[in-house]
Length: 399
Image 1 (tube, rainbow, N blue to C red):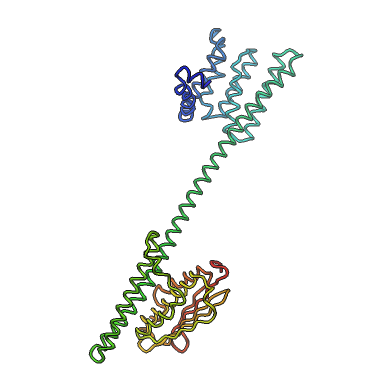
Image 2 (image 1 turned 30 degrees about the horizontal axis):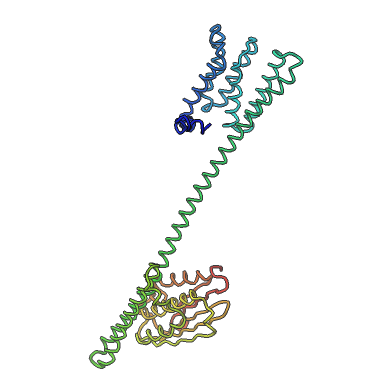
């Protein structure tokens, strides 16, 4: 058919007509149903229109209510059933009775199963009355079976449409829920990434600035008495600043995947704890470091977490304790977990401002939680502060 239409030059236009009609029917159901009702009145019951006005009114009553079939399926079906019963009582035969099948189809397509079964029962009762009154005895069974098959077909088609519509609505709802969940997951991922960036920036900036301030204070105190020591302290300030810039470039390079600078500055690991301890020693905090166990099998991410935990703990000690304090770092590595202890013996600069004050401990707990671990921070009975962390290496993220 499409080949013939294309041959006569009207294929694309004519084949687009059904699609346009379908779209119009979906957007304007009442207009489409009105056109259906008028078409049935004219085509199916044209003979009644040429007869007495009472017969024409009966045909119109059996077809025109279909204009509202989708707005009020059950009332329209009920009206048609009553009109059909009146028609049967008046012993009037008309093909407009087919409108009952359309109304039944609409009930099945828009209403629940119970109402559909009630409508089928009403139509079947009408079929029984019609076959008994207007069909010869020898043909009653065949007529009843044929009309019942048409009834069942109309009901099944309507029920299938209802099921398909509900299925599509369920798919749309599921797609909407999945889209919302994806948006929520994306928002959570963005929030987590922001938290990670803020944590890294805090560790890099706060630690290095604390060390630089301590070194600068030491240089200011010794610049007149021992200029050499003051000069050495300022050199260390410069080195610490360069290290901070290096770490910042590395971190920003990681955020920008196309930045080659990140590859030239590896992430801090356990091997760099010695340099960290030396840095805080130069800032005036005597620090000892002990690493037990084989650190080579510890994942790089866990090593970075331990490095940042030690860095934050020492930074808090520098910031919140009086001069004269010292710190001890103990790292125990095993295949199952890694344990960290950072202890200082300093006194707080002000009441309530121990080494665990501020938001740094919160970031430490977040780092440990990534590896299913935890952090404990608090004052010691004989003075000082202790930070303990345990990271699980066998089941990261589980607790």
